[in-house]
Amino acid sequence: MLRGICPPARQMSSRDFPREPARDVVSTYCKEVRALGFRLLEAISESLELQGDYIEKMLGDQEQHMAINYYPPCPQPDLTYGLPAHTDPNALTILLQDGEVSGLQVFKDDKWMSVNPHPDAFVINIGDQLQALSNGRYKSVWHRAVVNSGKERISVASFLCPANCATIIPATQNGSSAIYRNFTYQEYYKKFWSRNLDQEHCLELFKN
Ligand SMILES: O=C(O)CCC(=O)C(=O)O
Ligand SMILES: [Fe+2]
Image (cartoon, rainbow, N blue to C red; front, side, top):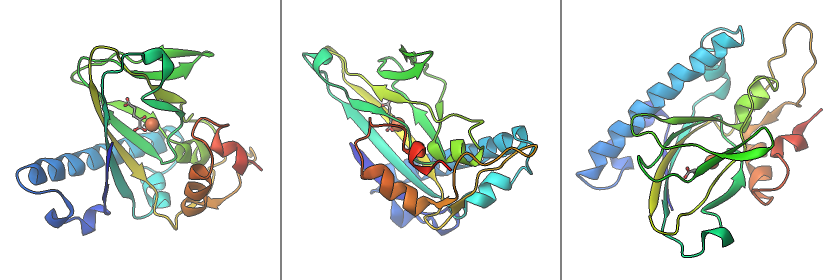
């Protein structure tokens, strides 16, 4: 697995990326994905009856992390996972799946379901911060990656992350009370990685 951190857009420079010619491709991809993420955050804000820029403002100067996941073929796929079950700790994940080899599964209606690859589509995962910000109206989905006995698989995940100092405050509606207490992303991230990935939903530890 290869992980990279892209700084907030306005500080981005070509020095942040690997050497030519990959640099231009990766840099353009990061910028385009970030722009798509912001459009989605605007639509999600509006769906929650908030101002269009509400979530973007609340998340502050966002970092963008990119993970390139490589899953080699595995002779005994029943004995291991490519990635164990987890929710994403960030706000929103834009996942480019391998166009042909499946591997991603989501937990829905009490069972694991495969997300079939589609060459012309991204998979958008709601992360823990959007579940908290929306006061539980959007759900951060449990997902995992399984491996394949015959074929390798690659996925590219772009994680939109709040600024470390951003305070996440649940947006309550019609007098409902906040399910989660206020916390900083820094606090959440530390707690998230101090546990096993497939333990209970980390947000459970931030409930009021
Ligand atoms: O490889 C996949 O489809 C899932 C990747 C993922 O969930 C992650 O990187 O957080
Ligand atoms: Fe994930």
